[in-house]
Amino acid sequence: MAGLEETALPRVPSGEDMAEGGALELLGDPSQAEVQFRNRPESAGLARRLTADVLRGSWRLPGTVVDDGVLLVSELVGNAVRHTGATHFGLRMFRRGSWVRIEVRDPSRGLPCLMPTRGLDTTGRGLRHVDELADRWGVDLLPRGKTTWFEFRLTDR
Image (cartoon, rainbow, N blue to C red):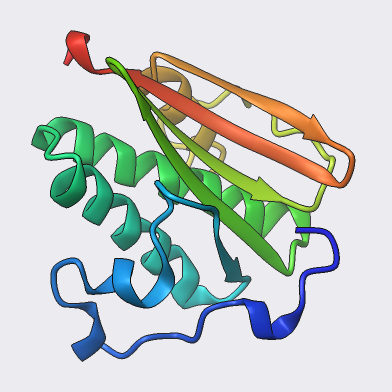
């Protein structure tokens, strides 16, 4: 994403554009290539929609995998937007054998951290959800930024 041009980012589709599978056609398929988003409030919803369209529509995975994947994408995108000051982020998805891997890339090299939380805390739970629901997760530092990822083993779900 180095040198990312403003024109390379997708336009924001209307509600009519977002029919089942429509997000993939308009924004791109994150299972084929990284889909890039601007840091805008509607981008988190678009990332969730693409995730659901791939997991449910393209890969025909069970509802629990779809629900967990959408929730965890929301958490990683939220972290990229809120805590890194990123102007953009990318979404990429892979399926290899019995594993699904979902990545969110941002231009910050600041590492996310798993925060201790208490029963009534309303913030700081994002990575806790990732840690609890994903089979594996981690962060790969890049020359210009990082990729935060999680994986599900499909045979266990």
